[in-house]
Image 1: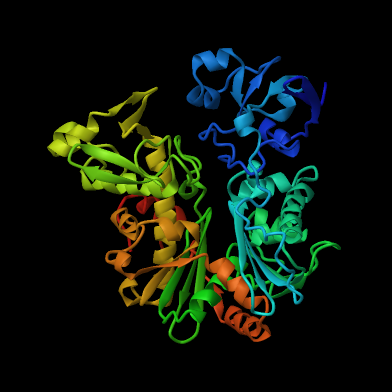
Image 2: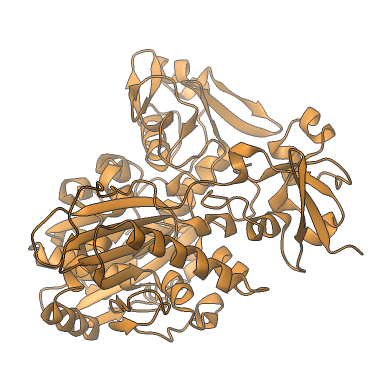
Length: 527
């Protein structure tokens, strides 16, 4: 059997080798497609990996039929994540230009004008290596001169939007080297565009991203029982042509250098214990600082829904993406980055805002079900005029956008995971949420989410919104503080020695993990 598929691009055709175990989406990603494009990790909901078979189209599977129309299926369109690469052997495939790949080369970087004089002492460079996004900051080692910052989507996104899909891809056929090379190339481009040399480099990220970057054994992170083989807190070799990179301490298998760097940043900023650092990404990380100098940490897999990946109309925040919803007398209106107006997709904060408004209007029950029209107010009935059936699944059309029942379930899973982490940490510490001085919301999501929406959906405990502080990109802030400062590095190593990672599966007493999770699958905070 032919172990190749053929990629058609206009008049050009190229051979793409396929490996056993790869989906077609993963085989195309190895060939350079979907670079920096967030995919839903094979669950078949985002539709962003659609391709057209010009020949030998495989029979549609249920995932295809849920996202593609009968006319599209008849024309050869399929979701490449839904088909094994080996089943497509010999086929000719067309990838639409709009999904072929995204620019992950450092877009957002402020390049120095050519007339700017190089900084003789060089730059300190910090990189926040996120599962979804990359952010860097270069600042003169002399302390004088301008700071250069930039951000981009993680070019590894085509291998999957969350950690486990990334590791599964890395485990097969040179996947780890391919993923590592994408980040090293990003760093090379950033350094090449600086007006002076890099004197010191620091990288913060979760343990999986750090292990892939450093070319380390990641098997302890890929399957239970999980283990951490690299504890960080030191400089590491990246490549012969790159500076050695300082990596802050890693607290546990899924609480990484981004958490320790973030902890240092908020502590340096004057956070008074007891405080809680919360980073809600594809992997939620939580650090509880206690008055006696100890720290309790926990992590939960949250998936990419809060990034806008997975829900049917989800998209990363950007132009035309609803980031919030207003509840008006005539119904709901989406709010985009540009202001109120038409939106073509919904971001993570937009989904939270939409569900919070639906809860306020009585349209959405606590358990995530849509209400009956007889149960709601006149405003609720106006909203529910958009409720219909889509192939057996309830769908609510609102403001030119749609919300499926399965989208609500995806957000409920995120809510339950976050609630579980809060409950486990508070129980382990022997305190209640009312004892907190502040909840520091980290990362891009924490900078844009409305804490009142988190509280309305039960992600935060009662009155939790009042304690929230927007902390910004604490991972990047922290690594930039640690890169040039030997004393700071010793301090964060000391903090790592006083940190205990809580096993949420055993922290809730006699309650089993599955039972505790299901109990929290409601839009209400459960202690």
